[in-house]
Amino acid sequence: MIGSLVATAFWAMLPAYVPNNFAVLAGGGRPIDGGRKWNGSRVLGDGKTWRGTAVGTAAGLAIALGLNALNEPISGALGVELPAFELHAALALAFGAMLGDIGASFVKRRSGRERGAAFPGLDQLDFVVGALLSAFIVAPGWALGVFTLPVLAVILVMTPVLHVTTNVVAYKLGLKNEPW
Ligand code: CTP
Ligand code: MG
Image (cartoon, rainbow, N blue to C red):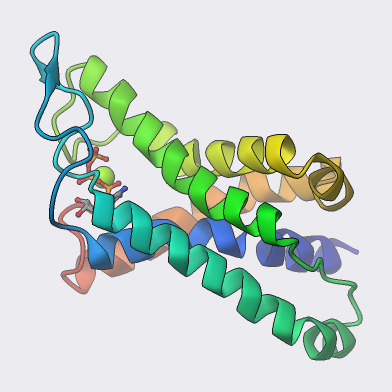
């Protein structure tokens, strides 16, 4: 029961988990805000780039398509009916995750935090909120079917744990400047 909830939550959120990690790998190039400031602070900062956002979104979409291809055998092996991604749902999860992260940077700059500063809570959940909101707006029928209350509860607990773990690993591997 709890195992199938965790499997469903993880599977459904993978297209939202992956984009940020690919953005870290692909980052660099022109910042989205073009260097512009608002009230003396950067609008978003150098950590939000066009390339990172595009590559992250594409990676999330690719993961969703890959998961769809593997759905039958893995659902069968686990004995769990894992969700298949509608194309627009996959795009909403991936791009929504990036938007959530960008929104968090906007909030961080407004609160005087420089690029890379930690904002506990926001850092761990910004992309989840962005991904889920986007999915419910863009693909409401699909999202209502997949993200039931128990699945949402698992996502809320599981995501910060996964986020902290992957970021510490990325930091130790020298891929990321800060461990958050
Ligand atoms: N990145 C990117 N484009 C994005 C998101 C991330 O290019 N939309 C890349 C950047 O190289 C960034 C790195 O991934 O530095 C780490 O992402 P993140 O921790 O979100 O950015 P920070 O540099 O910490 O900046 P911020 O304080 O705004 O979160
Ligand atoms: Mg950061």
